[in-house]
Length: 235
Image (cartoon, helix red, strand yellow):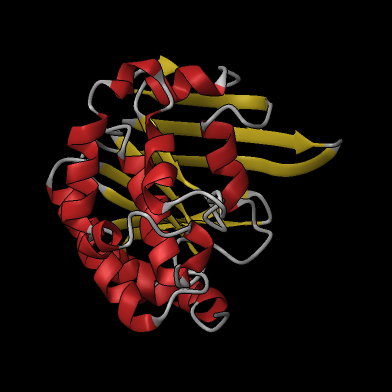
């Protein structure tokens, strides 16, 4: 579904990505792992057309999308849960969710998608009229995930979704993400907590200093001594 090869990106003249490659097949749960500053979020930004690709290729279902306008990429079926949630704090929960249907093609299904999101996260239905700023960190993250789901994405990108979220809520959200995956949505998860990510995803790519340095199944990565020595103790 998503095929990134030899991706290189500069931002404000600074080389952020040098050589990143990864593949996400339809229906998979794949992790993109690495330390802060490794370039994980930049990979997602490049896939969404939010930063200019200097070189390399990004394919979405065989279609080349590097440097394509973000609106067209969203129309093609990619959804993003951004780092830091980026909600509208002075809008209600439901108003924030409805923002996920801002593209014309999604507006006819707004009511149906709201029902779907409220089924996944019943607490959001209870708090639908509350301001987003009044919610806990975990509830705000549910809104951010729900907003992305309003557009019925085929591929869901999650950028550090568990920062500031209580452990008990993290487990609940992971259960919902498993339901979403079982329903056919492909997931690419950016996560700094290596153990948590490897418990959820099927395969992972690890980037370091803007380059892909490891890849493999969760089991294979945990058995990789070089990977374990460098990354499992950094959290």
